[in-house]
Image 1 (cartoon, rainbow, N blue to C red):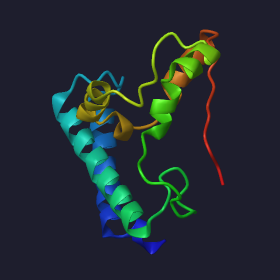
Image 2: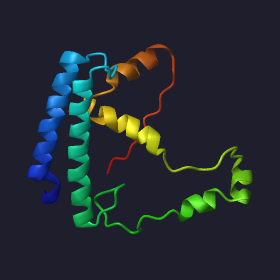
Image 3: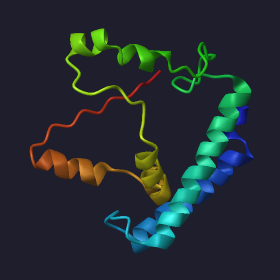
Amino acid sequence: MSALTSDADDGCRRTVGRCRNSTQSFDPEGAGTDENTNELCARAYNTCYASIYAADAKLDRSIYDIRVKSKYGNSVAYVEYLNTEDVMRSIGAQVNHTAGSAAVMKAFNSHGDQAHGTQLKSLAELLARGIKVALIHGDA
């Protein structure tokens, strides 16, 4: 797994560090209103994304669990299946399944939201207001 901790990873750490320092100084509420911080954080996200997925491609690892080899290529067969009339009716779906929105992803990536830092304060505020929050993650 040394490919995952290469020089590219150090570039990822450095750019994320600069992003988070800028966020603390110029956008402490995380509103995304400081364009310089947004650009810095977008660069940090892109640097990290490129290094992780480049290593993933070299190692032929699953994007969902890097401990195992990828079993399946990129396939949209499941989307076709989920959008069949029978399946939609059986699960009570009102609209068809869409894997993702390019417009939404572009908006998130342009601000570098993933690199800005922790969302603990936002989560704490939601919990304090009585809003139920589910954190779902995998841990090997």
